[in-house]
Every structure is written in structure tokens, then in C-alpha cells.
Length: 460
Image (cartoon, rainbow, N blue to C red; front, top):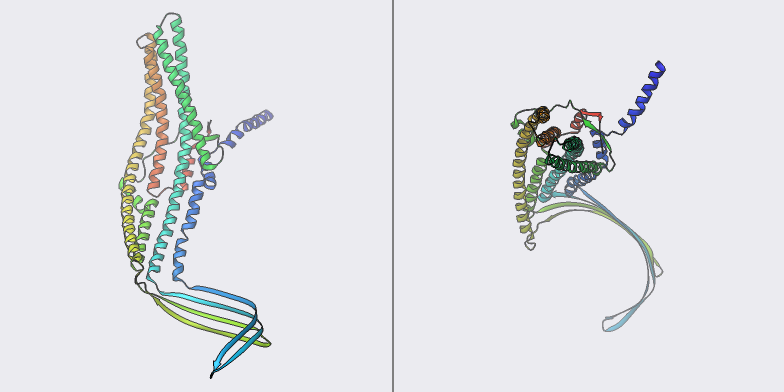
């Protein structure tokens, strides 16, 4: 007996293990997208590039060290005559011979900005832009969570729609067959057959469209991960839609104003533009720079038949002042341009803040609506089933016609589709509310993943 049980257990594992092994969960898709999504990779590269803006603008305020060196070897053949007059006498001098020399020199210099207001404001602008890049990358990471959730639950939505469409098609097909049988024995007119056939044809088309939508939804997962995904885990029946916490929309607005990453990007962009305008306004101020340099050079060679040798070294300290007076009007144009861009950035921030507040309120209301909708859709399935049973009973006794039955059947399957869609709408609206409030994180993916049931196999 024990041997039989053991063989049965092994057989069960052999049957279900492959199915569980190939089922991808929401976490599987998300972790794969983290490594393979080209949009996130591009966002990461842009972040790494833009965070260097602070270092680039700070360089103008830090010491600058430069070094140069030179080695020169030359050979010259001198064959020249010089004529000159002294006290009325014409004299001439002839130079003839080879000149060879080798020389080595190097120079080291250190310069430091002492007073440079535009460079300081440019540095402050660079700081804001680097922080803006960090906020933008955080927003891009949240966007990946939304895109993964959309793609995953759109597959589940398409699968549920396909299942109900196919079940509706089968039910109407059975009804059509029964109608034909009753027509053949003279119990129903031919119009009932035609009406049933028309409804069946429409259901068959809807079923075909639902199958195509499912294939497209699976392909969208491939866009994120670059891999094929053929089997997913479905959403458990015990999933519960609950109201958002906190329940008050004003608290969500406060969270959004304080934590929304796109709003932070707009605010930091405003700060960067403001400092750029300050830098342009200070462009006419004098700049003071200190410089220290050390040089060393030596050379030796032969001039004609005489050896030559030279060695020099020294250092210098320089403090220079420069101030632009007139550069063809470019300074004034740059100042006006920077001012207008600062105004544009400030207005852009105001717009972003208003949109964020409005999005927080509307998404909060949408979550509340979707929570109630899930409960109502669940109840509508029960009501539609009861109505279908009553209509079928009336049809059997002749008080209802075939059209009433077909309508009642389609109402049942429509109610099931509405319930499935309501659950997915609730999940995605809650995720978007958290994104607007700056509260969306990978932890939400793992929490949602706990509601998935690997036994509910979703496949093409």
C-alpha cells in the first residue's frame, strides 16, 4: 500500500511540477524587466550622465593644475655674411659652420578662482540639475513598476475576457442547437432560429477578438523583458479590494505635494533656471584669478666649434583681474534669455503642482469608486445568474421567448467580465495613486504577488 502511495505522489509531482516551473509571477516579470527593459536602461544611463553636471560646474571653482614639457633637438647649417659701416668704412663678417643643440623644458602651473560670481551660480544650478536627475530616475523606476503591472494584469484581463467570451459562445451554441431541434419538430418558428444564429455569430466574432487581444497582451510582456512568457499565475479569487489608507483625500494630496518625483523634477528645474539667471546677471562683474607657475629648462650643444650650455628655472605668482565691458550685446541678450527661461520654469512648476494635486484627488476618488465597483460587480453576477434561471424556466413553460434567454445568458457573461475588469481596474488605480503620492515601491509588487495563485494558470 505504501509503495502505491509513493508512486502516486511521484506521478502527481511529475504532472504538476512542470506547470509550476513555467508559470511566471508578477515578481518574475518585474525582476526580469529590471535587467532587460531598455527604457529603464536608458533612464539609468541618463541619470549617470546628468549627475555629473554638479561636478562639471564645480570644476570652475576648484584649483586647476596643468603641466607641460618639451624636448627639442635641432641642427642648423649657418652660412651667412653681415655687412655694416663704421666711420665710413664698409666692413663685413662671415659666419659659417654647424649649430647643434638639445633642449629640455617643462612648466607646472596652479590657478585658482578667487572671485567668480557667475561660476558660483552655475555651480548652484548644476547641483539642482544633478538632484533633478536623481528625482527623474526615481520617477522612471516607479514608471517601470506601473508598466509591469499594466502589462501583467492586462494579460490576466484579456485571459478572463477570452474565457467568458468562449464560455458565452459555447452556451449560445448549445441554445442554437436546441432551438434548431425544436424548430425541426415544429415547436418553434424559424425566426427563433435566425435570431439565435445571429447572436451566436456575434459571440463567435467576440471570442475571436478576445483571443487576439490575449496574444497581443502576452507580446507586451516581451517588450519589457525581451523574453517569451507563455504561462502566468492568475489573481486569486480571495483577493479583496479595500479603500485606500489614509481614507481622506487631503492626506493623499499632502503626500503627493511632498513626495511626487515629477513635481520634484519641476521644482529642481526651477531652482536650476533661477541660478542660471543669477549667473547671467553677474556676468559683468569682475573676475579675480590667482596663478602660480614654475618652469625649468636646460639646453646644450655646439655652435660652430664652441660648446654652448644654458640652464634656467624660476617661478611666478600672478593675480589677474578681468571684467567684460562690451561683447557686442551678447551679455545683455544672455541675461534676458536666462530670465525668461527662469520665468518659464517657475510657471512650469506651478502647473506641475496643480496637476499633481488634481491627479491625487481624482485617483483617490477613482480608487474609492473601483472599490465599490468590485463589490457591486460581484453581486451583479449573482443577480444575473438568478435572472437567467428565471428566464430559462419561463422559456420552458412558454412565457418567455428565445431572445429573452439569449439576452439573459449574455448578461451573465457580461457581469463576469465586468467583475474581472473591476478587480484589475482597482489594482492599477491603486498603484497609480501611490505613484502620484510618491509611495510606490518594489514592495508593492511583492505585496501584489502574494495575491497570485500559481494554480490559476494563465496561458495563450
